[in-house]
Length: 320
Image 1 (cartoon, rainbow, N blue to C red):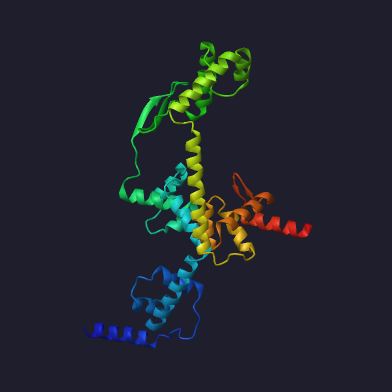
Image 2 (tube, rainbow, N blue to C red):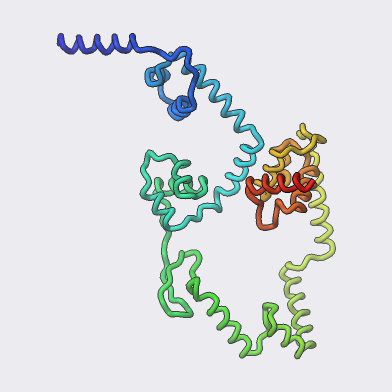
């Protein structure tokens, strides 16, 4: 008992005599550790970082304020919109990436794991949630490939008829059978053009019959339906203009390089979402996107990277 009491007195004396960082500035490593373990008691954090509990409380308040400001930035708002949109259709990963997720440690952070396997954060988070809940498995159905005759595995909701490398041969065989039976071609190929040139009257009859069938199924819109859709689109455009104009605090101001980079980076988002995030009007965002598209910075297949954007801007300045 005497030895135990003496040991406790020594620990308490070391704790009291330990120097505190009362005047030292907070380093980025300290801030990262403090924010990562912010749910721990302040007394425990103070002992770990050699600070006072008052300093821990003040620093946590500053970090929370900084995080809120970062979330309210245009880039952060657009990234949150993109994450919400890609939550349900960006979960496709390769077998190697799924294996890395299965073998990852439980204490490894999802962001670090996503960077390590070069996968989207939302997809990695969704797969880790499925693995924890036990809902990442699906029922397999085995069928026979129509081309090579070998077994092929597919989901119960989407049964495959051929392997990926056999689909072209399957399509060619089906088109060959249709040509032998004299059926009209469904795709515009050179055989289609030759058949239409040989049978112009029959081609016109088939075209008219297909048009009537599509009209009965509702696939062909009448003049009233087209006018109704046009009116609905115009009304939606007016609502978006009024909504964006009401909050456009940067209306009429020149576009900055940072805003152009955001337009290029999030070119696949809607004009309304980008305008609300940048505090601009929808008309301004639309015209600016058109100008960046004419420059070649935004294409129909996606936008260029930020480094390419800066390189193109420097080239344009040199030309001037």
